[in-house]
Image (tube, rainbow, N blue to C red; front, side):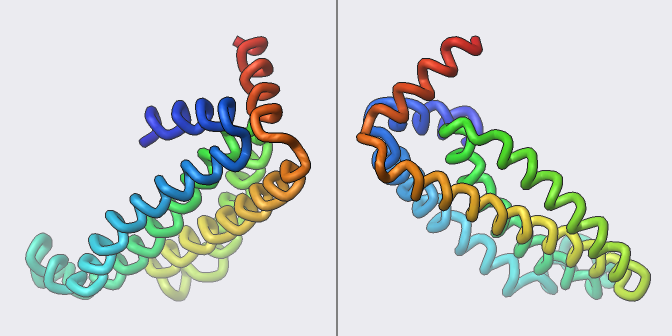
Length: 168
């Protein structure tokens, strides 16, 4: 996805502006969700038997970590889609800030959860960091789409494409 989606997204943005970019990313996100959600649900439902099968009795009690990881993967998928959008519209500063917010949130949460909840506290901290980064990134993307509603299709994409060519 990392090598294909951004290229096509930039092309759509250059040709059809924000509406084309959003339509493409919605389609990709819907397709990805349709592929990802059944797998994640299966892992969640069968976390204990899978953990027992792969790691034996001694790790079966850690099956809850699989569920935490499923939650993290779910959020990371949507975060990646928003990052594709932000990169396409050259809002990379929002991506950097989201990374900082995720890190700070995860570390602060870990400070309060790891001692009592051990590895579950670590997973909760990572999930909280990802969720916070997702919320921030979504808000940034929403601001951009709302401000771009007054720009005719194609013009915003052309400006970004010219800017990208100048930087190269």
